[in-house]
Amino acid sequence: AHGDVYGHNLLVQQDGTSALIDFGAAFFYPEDFDVERLEVRAFGLLVVDLVDQVRVLPINQKEERALTALEDIATRCQDPDVSKRPRFSECLRR
Image (cartoon, rainbow, N blue to C red):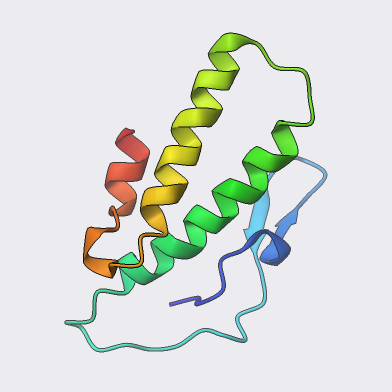
């Protein structure tokens, strides 16, 4: 697991692609360890960072609804009860 999926560890290249960098917090885990629900918390924090950046721009109602939905996902991803956090597949569906 990467262990540190936050905005400061994403490198955006000139062609628009991005790469995850800095594997200093990476770790191995047992097969029965539910690492996805730990990593999804970092994803939620990343979503908050991105939404905050977009909110400084003028947005329309449709974009506002999309940002609100993203904020809802981000909140769920950060639930203190790890077992209640969504999986990435659910985040993608929403």
